[in-house]
Amino acid sequence: LYTGDISHTRQFLVGGCARPRKGLQVDTLVIESTLGATESETNGSYTEEVYRLADAIRRVLHRGGSVLLPSFALGRTQEMANIIAQLQEEAVIPFTPVYTVGLGRAVYEIYYKFSDYLHPQATLRPLSRFERLGNVWETSVVQDLLRRPSIIIATSGMMTENTPSAMLAQTMVKSSHHGIFFVGYLDPDTLGYKLLHAAPGDVLQFEYDRPGVEIVLEDIARYRFSAHATRSELAAIIERLQPRNIIYVHGDADALEWMRENTGGDANTFAPLVGETVTIEV
Image 1 (cartoon, helix red, strand yellow):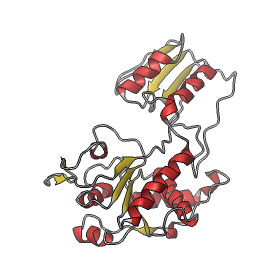
Image 2 (tube, helix red, strand yellow; image 1 turned 90 degrees about the vertical axis):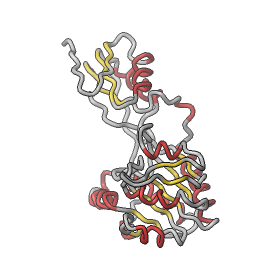
Image 3 (cartoon, helix red, strand yellow; image 1 turned 45 degrees about the vertical axis):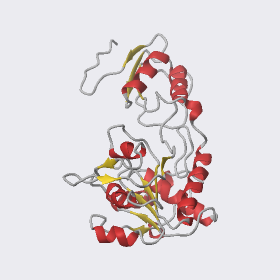
Image 4 (tube, one colour; image 1 turned 60 degrees about the vertical axis):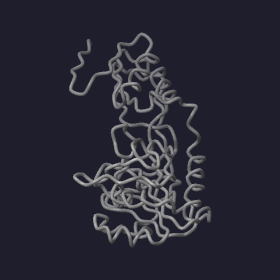
């Protein structure tokens, strides 16, 4: 059995995964381990995180700034767009233009076409509800965009150099009135992680082969909208299935280590490196 990326949490558009039935015979379980190093009890509820983010967005818009939400093109862009729309419709945050970009919009059209697969209570707004972001590689386009408060949902979620979120952030970090709020996982080697942990006065490079930019902006934070199961949920799946072999994948070294040391009982456990071959006795 291969889990892929799983979560028990009901998100705005997608329901949580069904728990495997007891008695299911599984010889080998390949299970994701993304949050293996994160204590489950530190995560608030999904709804609580939505309103924490709303407070931060409202604060930025009221002081005349714009909000950047770096988001993955698949899943997170569509989720965040509809969360923002819902918050505006509930008058929790002001009505300002909401922009989406590129691949995130293309995936949105697929969501719309196959909306029957979403949660039965999900409300998927038409893509026309959200403005199309212009050519952010043109400095004048970004400067014009940021003259008025707005909410911008842009790829990449980890803010890889030269992507739309990085190009927008390159201008936004030079001012103090904007806000950049990450809403997904950040690999420690990425620009997004470095920006999240940067202090005013630090210099970061947002474009390859271009000089770095000094950080002025302080309102940079991360909100947890993970599409991954907590480590206690992962442990419960393993306990329920009782597989003979467990292969832990899709996690940093410390996450894989925690999972291997704290789950599985008497099972044969593996945490292979990329490219490593695992031999299983049957």
